[in-house]
Image 1 (cartoon, rainbow, N blue to C red):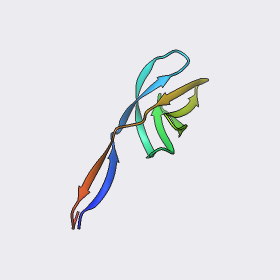
Image 2 (cartoon, rainbow, N blue to C red):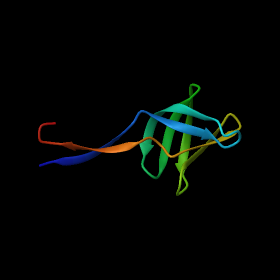
Image 3 (cartoon, one colour):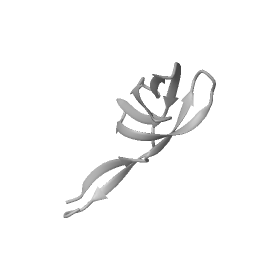
Length: 79
């Protein structure tokens, strides 16, 4: 019996909507199409899905991301 699971990349691109700068951030937690928690400049930022992108605020700026790439993993018995 195969079990289908999902995993995601540990990094994703984050865009500051105030100045259009894009940086890489570490993904701490992801609930697909609900929320994403990332670390940027040693600060945890909670981002919420708005139907198109994840949106969060920190340091007086707004940030958006499509989130990390998600991929499916098949696991067999005993794995």
